[in-house]
Length: 142
Image (cartoon, rainbow, N blue to C red):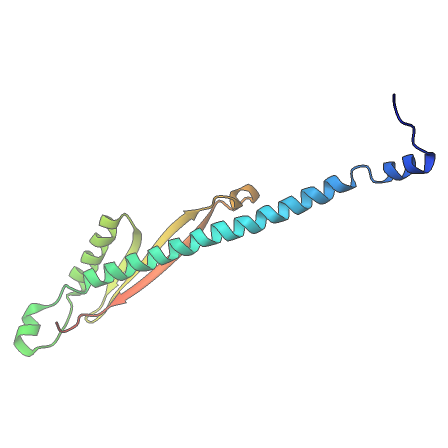
């Protein structure tokens, strides 16, 4: 037995056909984008912190390349720039990180670059974030 509705109720019902579907699609898409920004933003921030830590550690490793002859002769702390940069780069390689290391007579500077793949933002075409970390170190008297 089917129930018959009055004409005014049947026409009211047809006016809303499909309206709620569009609203739900837009709402769910917006919520997924916000969740993606939160999740992938947090992962990108963690990757940046990791890159900064690797850069600082590599710079400290490079800052151990002290010119011992100069230090023993007059007590001046100077780096051997080529050796300091090579030591920092070797540290990065051992860590599995990608970056560059430069050195002067008194400072080692390391920049680490990494790509953090996204989890949810890949659904809207953002496949990864590029993160950079930089660290510097100077030799210190022990």
